Image 1 (tube, rainbow, N blue to C red):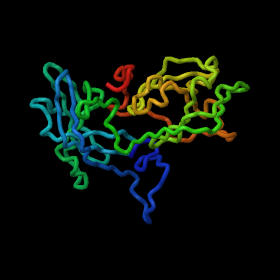
Image 2: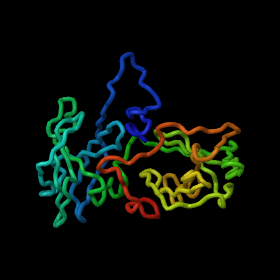
Image 3: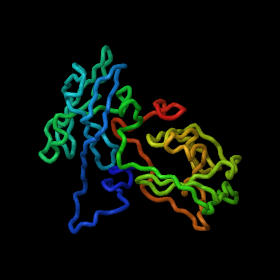
Image 4: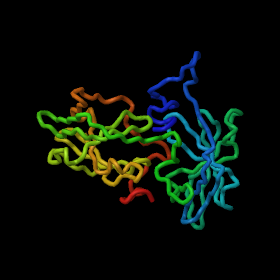
Length: 289
């Protein structure tokens, strides 16, 4: 997903490689100006507002937004004695975030002993995503994590013949699927519901959230758990696949033009880190907030 997540160029499981004569460092961090106005709300109040945000891309993690100290409302950051050590960026000091009567312990941090090569982050503070009420770019709320400018989704129509089987049963048969290309992922094939035997699908309560597509619902196919999924109310940017159904190649037998698809390694989204365990409560039906 994007530059440093999943199989992106700076991710641990990068699908491509840099064509250079000498080996690159095992880990490469990349910082760049966001060049968009970003705001943070906590306790019902705006606590940070800046057009000078720097985005940090760190291998295996979603992008993190760093704000200049001058962007903070007065009295928002309360220093604590808690410190940690970042493997690349050194000592990290943590803050309690205060907004009115609301206090969020260890909800912001600053790298206070940066090596010279990381001076782009000097004097900057990042907020734990879930600890805040919300983040905005201009007047649009950004849900999940800071938007990755290298993340792209393209949806293409195709007339290729897609067949999904589970055991002896044909679950889907279509010559009008949509194929969704998303940065860092293998292509995903989406089937119109009219071409799916929905009686073979059992909806389950499990859901996940994608900041680029919306809330994802899942289905079992017989004994194959969560073998199919659908964005029932996809974000407007990807509404072409709204309600369509996609299938996991390791949960069902999926064939394209007679050739069976195989699951690719490194494709699972794994929540991790202080601001990675997003609840779908933050993504109500109806699209982007």
